Structure formats: C-alpha cells, structure tokens
Length: 135
Length: 135
Length: 135
Length: 135
Image 1 (cartoon, rainbow over the protein chains, first blue to last red):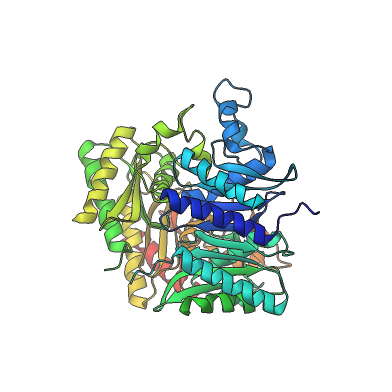
Image 2 (cartoon, each protein chain N blue to C red):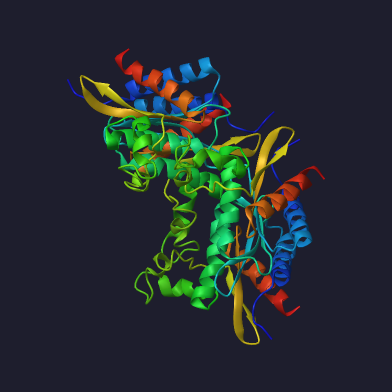
C-alpha cells in the first residue's frame, strides 16, 4: 500500500478539523500538507485571522520537517534550551502547538496545521483533524 | 449585501474548478483568494505538479493585485512591450493565463488561480471556477 | 455603507496622527493600510528615523493580520509564552506597540502603524490617528 | 542650503501628482522617496490597483538608484541590449516609465514614482508631480 496522501484524504482531514472548530466555536485556518511539506488542501473559516494562513501552513510544514507535533518543539526552543533559534531555520518554522503529523501504518504521510485560536484550541482541532486519517 | 467572500463560496468556486478539471482529465492546483489576495481555499488534485501550488496561488493574487485575468498580462510583459519586467514586482507576479478575478455586482471580491495543465486548460478551469460565484 | 477605507479617510487618519505627533514633539512614520494590509497612505515627518518606515508599515499590517493592536501581542511572544516566535511568521510581524486596527461598525476596515518614538509615544499617536476614523 | 527633501515638500509633490491624476481621470499610486530611496510620502487613490503600491515605490527607488527617469531604462534592458537583466539587481528595479528624479539646483534630492495607469499616463503624472518641487 502506498503511503502517499490523496486529495480526498486531505480534504477529509480538513473537514474533520472544520467540524471540530465549529464544535468549539473558534474559526480556524487549516492546512494539510504531504510528506514533502507541499500543500494539498487548505481552508480559512469565516472570521479566522489572516496571519494564520501562513502560521497554519508553517505548522504543518514544520511537523513534516521535524517529524513531530509542533507542540513538542516549544520547550526545546526557549532561551537556554537545546534548539534555541530553531524557528529561524528551514525557511522559517513554527514552534508552538497546532501542527500534527499524519501517521499511517507507523509512517508519516503528511501533516495538518491549525491556527487562529489559542494554542490549546489549535491543538484540539489539529488532533481531531489528524484522527480522521484513520476514519 | 457584503462584498466579502465567504469560505462556503470559496469552496464552491474550488469545487467547480475541480469538477471541470476532472471533465477535461487534467489534475490541477486551484487556489481561491479574497480581495486582499489572502488564501481562502486550496486544493491539489492527485497527480497535479507541485510547482503549481505556488503558481496557482500567485495567479490568484496577481489577478487581485492587477484587477485583471492574468492572461491579459501576457502580451504586456513581452520584450519591447509596455510592462516588460512586471512579473518581478509586487512580490512576484504570474503573467500567463490561469488567474481570473471573482466579480460580484461589478466589484472584484477575490480571484481564483489554476495551474498544472497547459495555459489553455488552466484558463478553462479557472473560468469554470469563477462562473460558480454566480451559481 | 461600504466597509472599505477611502484614501480621503486614510489621509485623515494619517493627518490626525501627525497632529498628535507634533503635540508631543516626536517626529513619526505613520502608515495606513486597508483591511487586506495594503498601503493606502504614508508619511515620514522630518527627523523620524528611517528604520521606522518599515516598522510602522509592518505594525499596521500586523494589526490587520492578527486583528489586534500590536501592543496586545507583546506578552504573548515572550520566551515561555504561548506565541513565542510569532514575529517570524506571516512575512515578518511586529509585536510591540504602535499598530492599531481601524474599526467601523464593529468591523476592522484597516489599521494604522506608528513608529519612531518610544513605544508609549507610538501607541499614543496611533491611538489618536485611529480615533480620527470616527471624526 | 540643504538639499534634503522635507515632508512638506514631499507631500506637495504627492498632491501635485494626485491633482494631475484627477485631471486625466486615472487613479494612481504615488510614492515620494528621499535621496537614499527611503519613502517619505505615499498615497493610493480610490480605484488604483494594489500591485502598483509596490511598483510606484520601486519606480521612485529605481530613479534614485540609477539617477535617471525609469523610462530611460526601458531600451537598455531589452534582450540583446546593454543592461539586459538589470531589473533583477539592487533588490528589484522597475525599468518602465513612471519614476522621475526630483532635482533641485542640479542635484537629485529624491524621486517620485507613479503607477496604475498606462505607462504614458504614469509618466504624465510623475512629471507633473516632479514639477511641483519648483513651485
């Protein structure tokens, strides 16, 4: 079985994110990228801030490039911590929560990035979106 | 009536583009932006080339910034023509066909950009997508 | 009534900012952008530093993209805070005070960014400029 | 006497450009820069295309950097001509008409850049704006 993410699957991930964002009443920007970090599907819900177009996409890309949820990077990039300054590399990464890898059969096949709410809300929506991969 | 483009409308434009792309058998990247050039909805169909993620988005942005279909720019930027070098400005514009403004009540409310086929195919799909605004 | 900001209104905002800057004796750079973050009017008063051409404009753009005064971002981007690293995203944002949204009928129609004084002075002038929208 | 351009003079240049643009019925973006190419005053008239925010500013900057009207560069950058590719240098220059140096006592003290109309219209307005320096 191929590990590559189809557009249909990416759209399903996006729509699962939108459904969760509607449940918590927070409009979001949601980006789904493939395992090369290239955009597959994107949606900006009405009322979601425009800065988060870039932030959501970078969160997804960062998750692919680092093979981690972006929330895991937050402690590592603080002053004095091991990867201080990491966010300046690789074209600009985002090191706060809201980017989550999409995993199938133990392999990262892409990532979803969510932005426009609090970091906790972003993570909630990204996690729900990523779960749709198994759906 | 507000002139601003909703996500539902942007998604309808995107889906009309996808439907037309399927009819002509050419997978596409399709980007829909608002009247400030900010991304609202994006889809990359299976098999569409990755360079066109950026190209489709820039076509849409160019259409908003220039208030014209990108195909109209092609003759103007040739060597010896009036706007030779235009594509270097405004953050990098695309001056071949496939970007089409979205017009409502005579006002540009956004644009759609399509890329991955021939320019003729891109224009065909972008035109079909833009027509969905009236639907 | 259209929500879009006219040049006359943008110039009125700019001039209100200049008047306040003269009152406090601090030459400023003042930028007014529309709701897509695109520049409408700009002035650099005699003696205002040149770095602030970019800073004032980015403050205005940041206010539009984040839908907030830039002063509200300052605590959020400190080491250990939720959005540490935010300023790296969305093309480069400014996260200290001096950018203020322009609001009409509860809707953000643009923003003003002011820079060249202390942050407190910048906020004072930006606030006076933004108040002119109601004039 | 200092050669430096004041904000009052820059605004006078800008307003002379706006007056001429109104006479010919073509809304414009007009940028005035100092002899270092740093923005002093800017206005975008209602209906002027957004791409020309950047183009007008680059025209003014190019005029300062090259010490020439941008229209003089057009023949020089064509394929086979001496400066082919010039527009890629110095951060991106514009090599079609609409940028005009501001000259006082034989010295270039800044430049004005105009964009949004035809190149002929842009040059007409930029020339009128530049003439206001003598007013």
